Image (cartoon, rainbow, N blue to C red; front, side, top):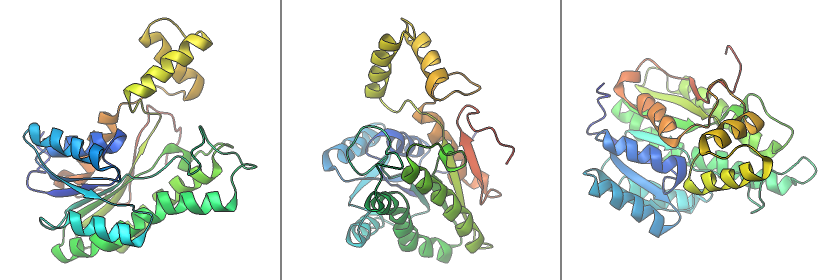
Length: 273
């Protein structure tokens, strides 16, 4: 299927690793001229170079989106070679403390809440404010937030993180209403539990051996999924599966989709809405 993305330009924030890297690489493979964003110059350049070696077009924009100055630098660098058609707000953090795992209600301070909100929500707002006006002027554009199922079915742990996902979902729908009749759409892709790296796979294998989840990777993945993030498919998602949903929403094929959430979670979230 031709998504008719050739010739478009896209910025994917937080695309020097993980989900963002998978998204930017798939968009480039579809003919999009992409801007790889990150704060680590070496990692961002490595992703961009891999795209170029594969025949794609890629530039790099470096900057900290938690500050206005950093957002200005990224927006300016991203538009240096032409206007952007697609903005994917993927950049964010699990927590701002450097701790392993999610903070509890008793651990997360008001400062923690403010910092993670700035990282996961306001950073995306900064990019929307800097890039969407030009999309409106050209009467075409795509804005996609990377959200998550915890926005709808939060757990006790990580209340600060869960709330930022809910905010991402909410602002995407509000933006869709604001962009009515402009040719610019706003949507959300909500991943479930994703096997985002080889390091995560190695960690799961180690955990699987400790918990008796099996000997083979297939057994460990199935049992780990059942123990930590049960879903109807019985495995973890892959970054490329999230990227495919983003590519669809970014394309002209999805002209009739706005204010929507596409869940890519194996059926983890059980909701008819």
